[in-house]
Image (cartoon, rainbow, N blue to C red):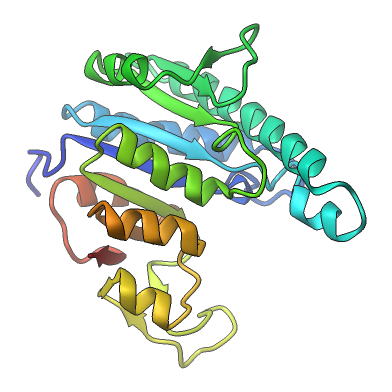
Length: 241
């Protein structure tokens, strides 16, 4: 396998639920350590890595909004949950030798992390630091998928990756439908038309309109991230304009 990177800069989108591991709530140290080592493998070959993480393992504002909580308040609480996850990832990354990480938040919380400043994020990435973007877009009603698409475009990432627990995009949920078929490649228009639930529509339209390449892959597969960034086209599902 080639160790030459096919991409200079990537953005990896993680759901909060991805950090659960075998737990029903919270953050699994085993999962964050695994992710840190997967990230180190690509940083070591010169790839610049940014992350966006959700907060669903701690709190989901939309769910409580349906139960009667004010939606804006609920979403703000969800943003804070993503900051907690981002700090956990920063700690895990920096405990792996030779890596540095910075958390940048879309809401001001200077006592624990930096504000999101695009040019500063760019400088961190150029210096080989992993940048973890937290607090979504800083606005209610927008998902962390939309935040990931926005940040990927802002930092001019060569590829956006969405880490899931299945190896790509299927015609149906493969955990529920054994007849579901995996797509090797799709266009954004096809994914939108077929309502495949890859990401929310705002995120997909942003990626489509700005020509952002997307790969959906199984984050639990050891070495998958390294294979993708070194040009392996067989892993996951590719989504292009």
